[in-house]
Image 1 (tube, rainbow, N blue to C red):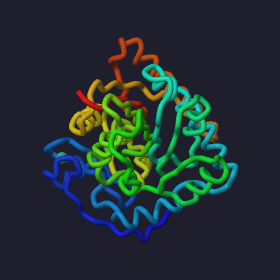
Image 2: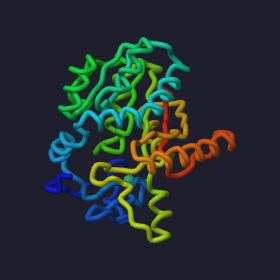
Image 3: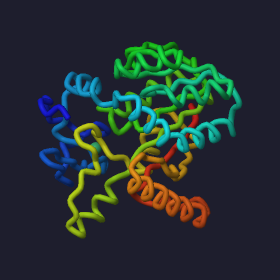
Image 4: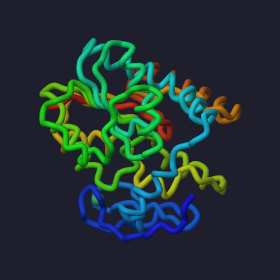
Amino acid sequence: MDMDLEMEKVDCPICKGSRGNPLHLEGSFEMVRCPSCQFIFLNPRPTMDSLLRFYQEYLPEEESSIEAWEKMMKPVFHRAADRLEQYRRSGRLLDVGTGFGFFLVEMKKRGWETAGVEISQKAIDYARDMLGLTIFPGPLKKAALPDNDFDAVTAFYVIEHLSDPLDFLGECNRILKPGGFLLLRYPHTTPIKNFLRFFGIKNRLYDLPAHLADFSPKMIQKCLERAGFGKCQHLIGGYTLPGDFGKRTSSVLFGGFAEALFYLSGKKLLFPGVSKTVWAFKGK
Ligand SMILES: [Zn+2]
């Protein structure tokens, strides 16, 4: 990881009301909690320029790692696609932070007209040359897409990387058609951090400085509503399939356990600490 990152102190990205109180330290990086709105964010954090440089090296390069990543995300992509297709069977879809483009491949297969946004040049080249996909170089705003253009926008593990999440959600809202569908998948790490700290277990679960924030379901919903989305619904994300046996087992066990609890509770209990999927529609 590039440790020559330039860091800057920032105000709370959501309410601008505070620079936050210390919450968790991970190496030399500190997550803080805003006393006014409870948002949890990295402060100080890398500047925009150093982040863009950082992401040129973020994704794996070797074919075997790319394949392992595809395998890991497959169950998540299938379930997201099924969820979307409960509302709409075809249309124009944009996947932001699309990486190598595997979700777009799945959606294309299902008959959707697809495009992606990505900031890593290596990933853009792979998606275009190996998979024949349409990719706009990111960030999303740079792509300058027209108003009311897409039926669906998806972003898997993106929002926790952004310096201005509200601005991003506003942009998603602008490019969606009225009633358009937005789906996000995001990690929710703070409850696990609290739990492990209780037992004195050191860890780097926040993935700092790549992640600039940690969203709770409540905070995500608040942000979506502020950005003009309504009918917000959550789903426990379910499991991923990482290549490492231990990680795969814990993902399947915890993901499965959390999901069982979610259904047993009448879709009320969003087990803390497990990745979540949320979707909402443009308009109230
Ligand atoms: Zn705040």
